[in-house]
Image 1 (tube, rainbow, N blue to C red):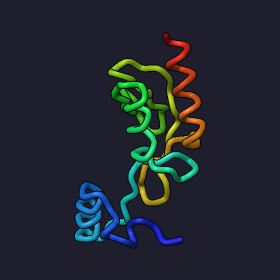
Image 2: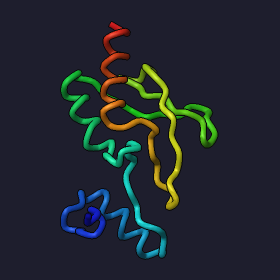
Image 3: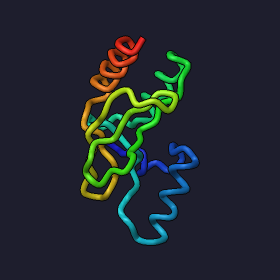
Image 4: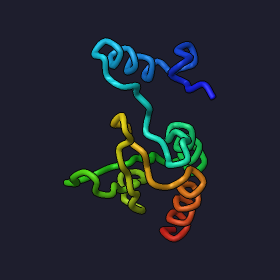
Length: 112
């Protein structure tokens, strides 16, 4: 399977810009934050934000690596999520995309 970074014309501008900087500095390839099944967060989060009319952020407050981060909805923490860095230093959240969506929906439902 060809990775998105191998097809620069398919990358969003923010990703392509980041990739150019990494290439200039001979750094490993950039991969946006993703879930443990490889699905990028930017492919999942906007859909939930639209559906629930909210803003979702992954946030760490006074955390140190590898502390869990909070998933926030409109600035309010609704659940925590584990994370780690892969071999090239990119963030991987320790749930699959489907598990994230299910956990998010349950947290919103329980908070209502």
